[in-house]
Length: 148
Image 1 (cartoon, one colour):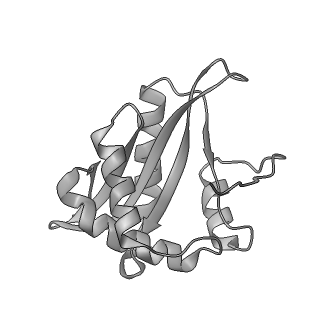
Image 2 (spheres, helix red, strand yellow; image 1 turned 90 degrees about the vertical axis):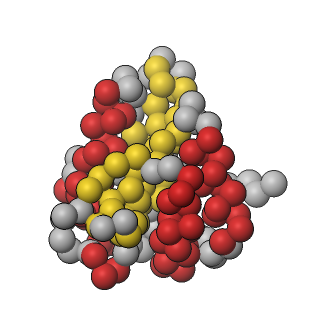
């Protein structure tokens, strides 16, 4: 039975494996195991920055997502970004992604977050359908990046 729970440092290698799959599927990113492991560790070791949730089956991490916390002056409240949502391809279409997403949404609500924002590839119609099915709405905002 698949369990959803908060990740810990022991889960980092398996989560890095999942991020390699995710970043191979996304247009803007490429996998870099060292960077991904460092980023995951930064989140886990600083719970005020965010939380990572995993779906596990008999000790195997089969899915993950993370919430990164910030403050919105528009909302006058704490808000979060949904980051790095991935279910291993062998485990897709079993409802795990929906359960993982709902777990993260419930957690955000319980922490008093006023909004969850996420980015997904414009060309990923399946991802867009998944998120809209779960209540997310398109935004008129356009992401821009400055790499430092």
